[in-house]
Structure formats: C-alpha cells, structure tokens
Length: 189
Image 1 (tube, rainbow, N blue to C red):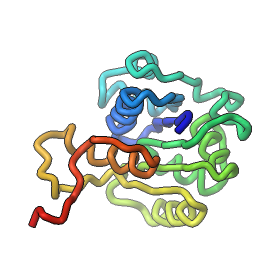
Image 2: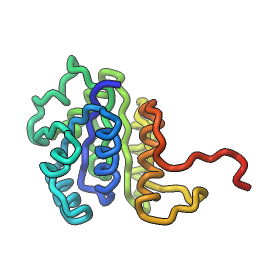
Image 3: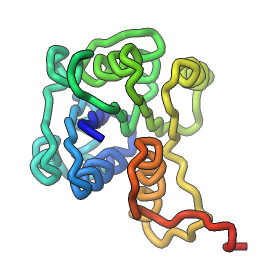
C-alpha cells in the first residue's frame, strides 16, 4: 500500500485519527495528514496536541487544509486511500453534496472520482436523519462508513482498547495485516 491521507475534521474523536496515524507510521506507511480548522481545536482539546506535533511524532506529511492544490487533492497523485477520522456531520453533508471547499473534502471527492478507497469514521450520537441519509448516499457510492462505535466482546480495559478496536476495523478495510486489538475467534462463548 502506498500513501494514505488521514483527514481529521471537527467531530469529537480526534484520538481515533491520532492513533491511526501512529499505527500507520509504526507500519512504515506514508501518511499525508490534513486537519481542518475545527479539527485543530478538537485535536488540541481532546489529545492536547497540534497537527504539527502529530505529524512530527508520526513522520506524517502535514498538508494545509486550505490548500486544495496539495498532492492529496490530485487525481494523478499516487494516493491509495483517504480516511476521514473523525468525520463530522458537516463534512459528511459536504461530501454527499459534492462540495470540496477544503483539502479534506477535496481529497475525499477525488478519492470517489478516482475509485480510491474512502473511509469515513463518523462520531455523532444520535445521528440526525440528514446524517443517516448522507451516509447511505456515500455508502451507495462506495464509501466505507465505520462509525466510532467500539465493540465490547474483547473486554476492553481502557480507552486505548476502545480506540484500537475502531483503528483495527479501519486497518482491515485498508487491507493491512496488523495485530491491533483482539479478533473474535468463535471460541469466546
């Protein structure tokens, strides 16, 4: 797998995007990190970090969310997947309407156009009907929707375990072998 774009939007759950960047870095994958203005606020509030610090810690290439001409926005660039993690309801609505007003939405729409893998990780509760309708529309267009709703069958002991559950599902959808979290074997019951 080549480059993966991780977009962090303003929804709560920045820790999911942070952890995904860490794991992909540990795997030696090239990550292009794009954080919206509201994503910067959430990343600081929930993870006490900045996009610059996260990029430095994970060897990610930080791209300016206002630069819709960056590599992540190009159909001819060698980008394998775009993951918006977390993905706000506003970002979901923009994608469903074809609005690409920042690098996160532009990268995602280019991913759809180029038939690249696009994964969104919404973190809302409850979902408004408009969010559900927009997620259904995106799913029909090939977008993978992984709600930030961790399972409990693996008996999580910490928040990190809950976060890793979602990150493991993302890695599975990216087709990457990993040892993040525990898999169900069928022998648990």
